[in-house]
Amino acid sequence: MGTMSQFLDLSTPAKRFRLVAVLEAITWLALLIAMFFKWVLGHTEAVAVPGMVHGIVFVLFVLVSLVTAVQLRWRVGVTALALVSSIPPFGTLVFEWWAQRNGHLAELSDGQTPQRLAA
Image (cartoon, rainbow, N blue to C red; front, side, top):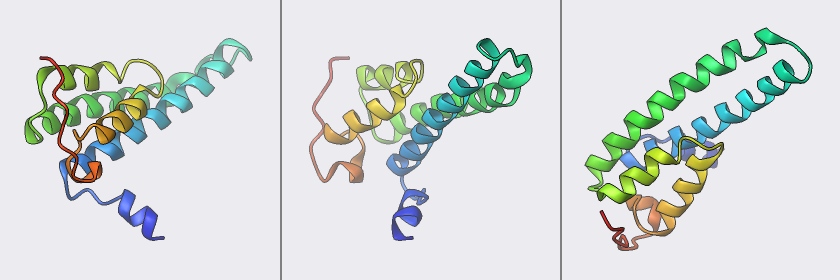
């Protein structure tokens, strides 16, 4: 139970970013499954709800990325990577892992100094 409460802790910009990045990936998965039902099984209505939910979470991810970039003083290159990561499926997870390993997500990065990415 402690892991779940840690995951839902939204007390810092990095923790909020991580939660929204994971939600964006989950909604991508739901949309991909819905697209299978639409295009392979012929259920045209299958993408309505997952598509709308993914769209909302996508916009939320963009907003949270921009707020996090300002709060954690990301360089332009890091911010651009965060925004681009929302386009391919599961890209937000890859970016979150990369940002954590490279010290761009503050307390999630185990005290590492951020490596500067060219602006």
